[in-house]
Length: 409
Ligand code: GLN
Image (tube, rainbow, N blue to C red; front, side):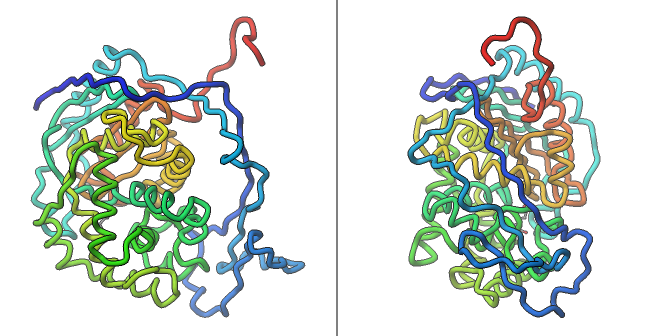
C-alpha cells in the first residue's frame, strides 16, 4: 500500500452562482418487463417531434417498438444564454484525506465479488488490489492504496468517447443517433438492440458505445483511433497507451461484440465498418490507466471540461453536462437506478474494476478493485463510493431544510 498527496498548480475552477432549474418530462417504454415479441411485430414508426412527423390520434401505448421522444424545441438556447451554474465544494483537504483513508481501511478486507474472466487476461488481476483517488477542481488530489497499478480502462472509456463525439457532431445529433435512456439489460445485450426501435439506447452499453466509436472523427480506422487516444489522454492529462496483452486477449474473444456491431449495421445504426469499429472499440477499452488517471478524467467532467491538472480545455461545458446525464441514467448498466438511488452521483464502471464518479463543481472520485458484482461493477468500488459520496457531500439530490434568515429567495 502506498499513499500519495499531490498539490497541483491552480489553473481551473468551477463557476458558482445561484442556479436555475431546467426540467423536462419524458416517457419511455419499460423494456425490462417485455418479452422478445419485437421481432414478430411490424416496424413501427419512430415518433419524433423534431422531425415534425404527425403523431397518430392514439399512440400505440405499450407497443414495445414505439419510442416516445421529448419535445425537441424546448425554448432554451445555451449558445446565446449561458446557463447559470450552481454547485458546492468538497470538504477541507484534511477531511478528504481522513474520509478516503477511512473508506480504504473499512473495505480493503471485503472479499465479495469475482474478477472478470470472459476476457481471459483480466482474470489474472489480483482480487486484493484496491485504490482510491479524489481530484478536486483545482487539481489537488489525495489517493490511497494501489494507486500505481495500471489496468485497462474498459467501459470507463465510454463516456469520454461519447464526449468527443458530442463535441464533433453536437450533443443533440449525438442523442438522436445514439439515444440517452437506460436499457435495463446487461452491457453486452443483443436483446436491447432487438427490442428498441432506435436500436441503440445509450452510449454507455456496448451497442451504443460501438455506434459512438463509429462516429468518432477520422476517415480511416487509424485516424479514428488516434482521435480517441489523443482526447482520452487530454482527459487524463498524460499520454495514454494501449495494453497490448489486454488488446490481444479481448480481440481473440470478442465475437459477441462483433455480433452486436454487425447487428447494428444491419439496422443502419452503425456509421463505420463493423469489424473496424469493433477493433477500434477494443483498442479503446485496452488503454492503460491508473486510478489517479481516472480521477483526473472524472475531475475534468466535474470542472466544465477543463482538466484541472493541466488547465487544458478538453470538452465544452454543454457537452460535459450531457455526458454526466447519461452517466447518471446508464453508467452502471442495469443497476444504474440502484446506483443513483443509493449514491446519487453520475458514475461509470468497467469490467477491469474501475469506477469513476463525478460531482459537478466538486471533483472526481475514482476507485479500482477487480472483484465485480453480477452486472460487472466493482464491489469494493461501490462500497467505497457510497461511503465517500455521503461523507464528502457528493450526492446531487441531497438537501436540508433552510434555516435562519432568508438570504435572497
Ligand atoms: N471491453 C469490454 C467489453 O466490451 C468492456 C465491458 C465493460 O467494461 N463493461 O466487453
